[in-house]
Amino acid sequence: MIVRKLQDIRKSDRNVKSKGWESARLLLKDDNMGFSFHVTTMYAGEELHMHYQNHLEAVLVLKGTGTIEDLGTGITHQLAPGVMYALNAHDQHIVRPETDILCACTFNPPVTGKEVHDENGAYPADTSAAREPALAD
Image (cartoon, rainbow, N blue to C red; front, side, top):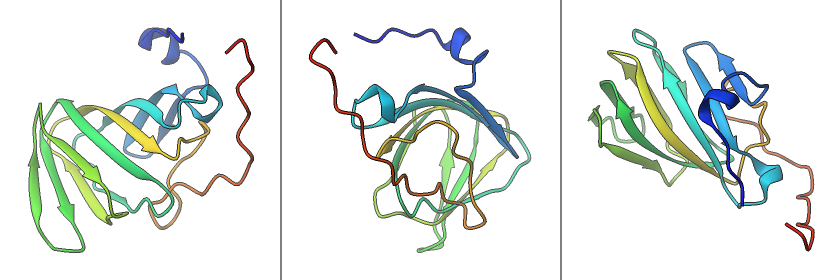
């Protein structure tokens, strides 16, 4: 069983900050869950261009408002508490937070923990081998 406190993660190296966002990464690849789990804040007034070419992501908005634009279709969706979006086709998108947006996110495959967006708005592919769980895990 894994038990972690968000307040502890926010004070550790699992809390990653980059331009326009901050992500507390509660589960990572080394936890061997098959996905990673993050609590992320996207900051008001930013325009976050993202294109996860190597990961699928699901996001649940917990607090805040904004929009997400699907660059493949040109459709813009409102973001508010209780709205979930899933980037199931490596969708290129732009998130425009009107207020700070707090959300819970999962990534598959899981991230390793230090990723930030590259020039294409993607996290790099992880090429390291997964650790096999020990019998005591």
